[in-house]
Image (cartoon, rainbow, N blue to C red):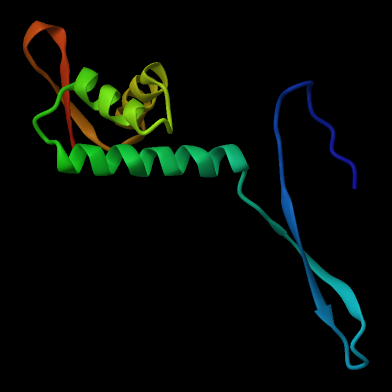
Length: 107
């Protein structure tokens, strides 16, 4: 299988599915597209943040980032970046609060 793309651009993954025939021998039956492991990790982090937003509706961005970094699953800066991207991607919404901060809430 060949795949051509510019250096560092694009990725793909697939899962191999095998089946046994009547004689018990295993053969390749199909290739299924698989999710990118980085995307799976990002989804888990979004789920953690979604739960934190739900449990702490009065916390601002800095407080949420501190709570997320305590678990050691993500850094404070990474948390803030995911929170900001989550607004654009429609995972949650935010409102501006005093001193230029943001408070996040679920739709």
